[in-house]
Length: 258
Image 1 (cartoon, rainbow, N blue to C red):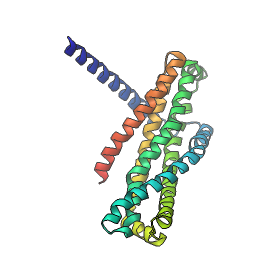
Image 2: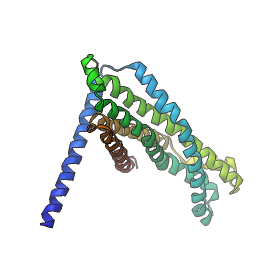
Image 3: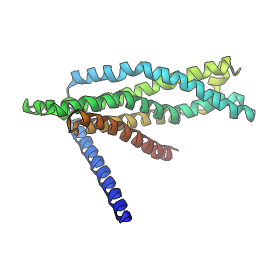
Image 4: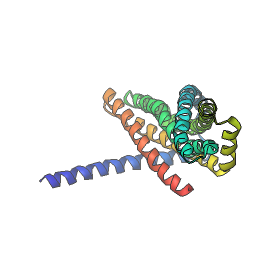
């Protein structure tokens, strides 16, 4: 009896996950259809870029500054052990640009922007504002979803580039002041060992993560039901699903990119 109940619960979880993944995929296809040719509200796009991108700059810079300090301190322990202090810039820069930067900034972005988007659209859904748009012959996907998807992708790419730069600047500063690794040594090793593909990989990952956060938060927001408690459940599900998807996509993208 216990085994059958466990199998039933596992099956229900699998079916729910499949339904949610399928719903997000359908939403993504709907967004793609409205981009060829472009059919979305440009004023809403500008507003989203301001609130999602520019207003997220402070938290990303603060996070990147601390990440750079922690990374260079951790990398120095292993590099100094093998007498490779001159490679501190490469060690800290490779991890920041290829892996830690895009993933960490995406998680911060999801917690701030993705959660807000799910709550905003969820509130509009349970208060019948989305249905009101349909009554006015306004397509909710074109007006609400497409601008947010584009804004999140563009914003996260720009924030990742800026955040990586800030993390490397703080790392080089700490390396110079505390660890006696001069600035020209740090940046020389970084620029010599990293390739253009490393920088491009960071940008591509940021774009993928931005799309994941956008589609996930919009899907859970528009599928909200059950009043105010339903909004809370949608926000929670959006953040968790985005985090899981980011780690899964990061694994496969790293495996493919090498």
